[in-house]
Length: 560
Ligand code: ADP
Ligand code: MG
Image (cartoon, rainbow, N blue to C red; front, side, top):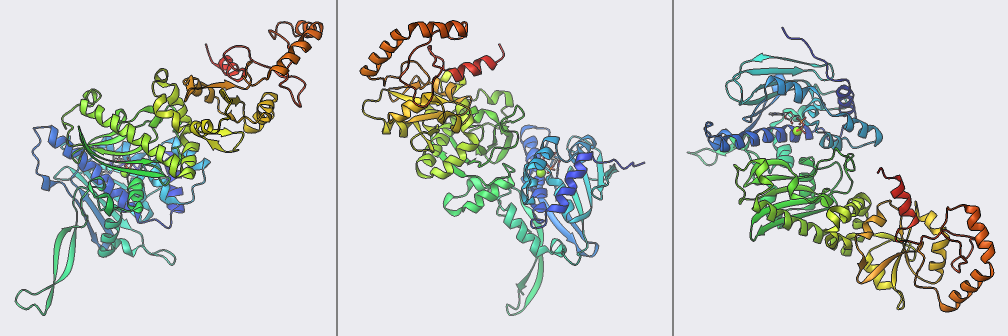
């Protein structure tokens, strides 16, 4: 007996959104299904290489695409790991996790192209062109095969089926063309070839199709005959193994999207081919936007890790320091052993060398962006600057050398973001300190009485508008031998002698008044003094110790 199971409620809604809002990019369902097939073969390949009980022949790994136009069927077949009944239910029964849907609702995404990549709802994109999808699959772990079938939003059925070898076959029943939409191209083999070349050229397993061509007759070169041959449509060279000079920005962007690294356009890519102490190739991306869960506990950093073209790990966290956790990409090294367990990877010397090398490549890349592509860098900093500042504080400040030159703060003088190096370069000759002021916003800081006087004397001030700014900076006691000084601190190093004298006199003259004020404030302040710092404000609070008033506020909010 087969009962129809309902999709989870939110899966249904997402499916609706997808089918109804994605018009321009229907063809990417091919890319999604092929990439699933390739992932499944990757897993099988890994199994075969690491498990002696599995005999394998590289020719056994392929993806095959075919059509049956009369019955409006597009078929995709792979020789990957397949799925057990449980995996079928789990993987094809729920579309996306709640976080993703919340994200979609919060951020009106117009171009549906992006939704798919972001949500890992790849499989369901088939319903953009299908009335019905039927999946036959047999897991490499099991003797039983199953059939999964669905008409889309209604739900799905799963029942036992017959299938000889492990792997998956997907039958897509292509929609009838209507007045506005045509679906015929998905039954047209030469069009399908074009789509495969466009999106999946680098897939490392052959994507086979029966290709019919006119060929000259053997005995008579003048005449031609139709010959049908099974051919690989893709070039099969992974992007990271290709020559940089042969690749365009578009190729990298397509790869970024294909690998589901993000829904944005990457700001920058770095293509490495390192032949040093350890050999590896890598393609790394600096995204433009943080993923929706980036600043949450759910976010998992990591790069895809391959050993000579074989996937070892989808998210290798050890390859990235936390402060560069926004980087996406893939690393392939022939020096890594395939059999290495995931626990052992952490201690692998080669891997540590790669990680160290990657860290400095990313840092250099960011530094050169800051120097040569200011606007892009500021976009990047908007998205990920906070993470860099966290990095300043990590491990007792041991990464500050890598990070201090990547920081930007708002400058009172330039009225835009500036780096510490830029600040120091502009310092006045007699200036002892790098001045900063903390507050909730540029506007609020601008109005602080303490900033007024320092600004009026012609000194530049860095505005710390984020709660972590001051903590980050305190990890550096100085920058190029210049100490940092909060404008709210007692001794600013810019009072001149005459003024100090005056202050002293006024202090004496008004001793009784100040004493009275102090008593009135009842222990809330440690002292009341005359000040020359005030311009348009009658009074201001000054911190006496090491810690600024803003920082004290934060410390008080922190749980003990
Ligand atoms: P994603 O690929 O982002 O995980 P998909 O919706 O594309 O999301 O696929 C969901 C899951 O279904 C995959 O993670 C995989 O476990 C399983 N799956 C999909 N297609 C195949 C296939 N051809 N062979 C084996 N498993 C598959
Ligand atoms: Mg997928």
